[in-house]
Length: 307
Image (cartoon, rainbow, N blue to C red; front, side, top):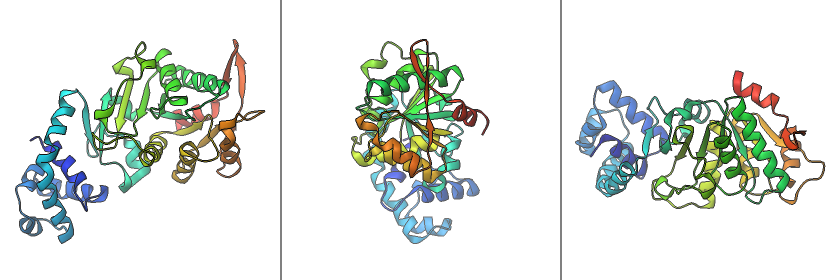
């Protein structure tokens, strides 16, 4: 089994978190050993060889016990042409390391162009039941980002997310999608089929490859999308739910937060007011250009390019 599969087993082992993964990697680097060597040792030998706690040593031994169980999933990932990007890889997004620290997802499973993971990007987020006006804003926002060679970052849900991804691809830009499920459950959305270019898209998942989507995963997904971004632009957010929580995540992580300001707010944009009043979000107004409603994004584009 390739050593990357051992890292997958470690992440799945009870008692192993991101900080443990980094501790193990640093210790292996210092000793000149590989994870394959580590998996050849018993818990007692691990304790004698490394400065790990007994709890960590036992957890590593537990990872050895489940390594064979993840082998089929690992080879399926490879057969599908997907990549596994560990936290120590040069391809791993430096932005996640910088913003999330020891709470970063240790492994990213991905499809597409790995280079995009380290491009400067802005998150364009919104409710799945986005209004017609919001749909237009989401589309033109991604169009504006593409014109400035800034990657559009979003989830992979219907509504604002898919509109933003399609716009980026349609307008010769790059886009990064964060999944709320494992990569082996990824399916290309119909709206992207005619514009797909694997060199201009990256699809990533921080979850075990076979995990199903759920509400909790969606919250994690949104937090990671925010952490990857230089700024977060929320098109429409209900007063409660995942998109408003994404605004909270951006606020807590210190990511500049922007939201569309409407003269008359659509039903699913009541959270926009709260983002402005309670989270300090910067209101974004629009202007019509050739009959398209284009948001004024100069400030966030400046942040993405120069900060």
